[in-house]
Image (cartoon, rainbow, N blue to C red):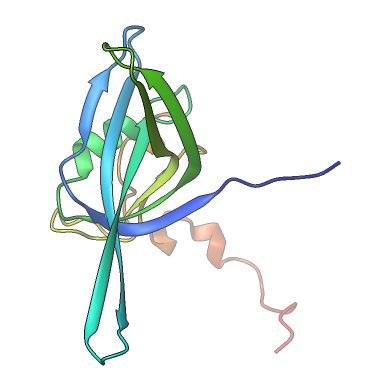
Length: 158
C-alpha cells in the first residue's frame, strides 16, 4: 500500500483579526490570513523580501473549538504557528463563473506571543477535548504533582 502525506506547517503573523462566522447548520468557522516572509540578497547585493499570504480555516468540532479559540485569543499582528492540510476548492459564483481557492484546513494553533500577551505555551489542537481546548494552560509546578518527585534516579545511565 502506498502512503501519502498532506501536512502544512506555518509560522507567521496575522494580517487581520480572525473572521468568524456560522454556517447554515450552526457550525462555527474562523478564517485567518497569515503572512510568511523570506528574505535574500539579490545579485547586486541589495536585500529583497517576498511575503506570501495564506488563508487558514479553523472549524469548531466535537473535539476542539479552534474557531472560538482563534476568535478569542488571536489579533492582527500576532505571531502564530499553524499546522494543517492544504486544500483546493472550486465553486460557481452567482454569475456562473468558476472560482478557485487554496486554503489550509488548520488542525493545530499555537500562539507564539503577539501583542495579546500570549505565551509560547498557549497550544491548541484537534487532539485536545472540551474545556482543555478552550482555555490557556495554567502554570504547573512540582507542587501540583508531588508524586513526580518520588522515585529514585537509579536507572539513569549517567
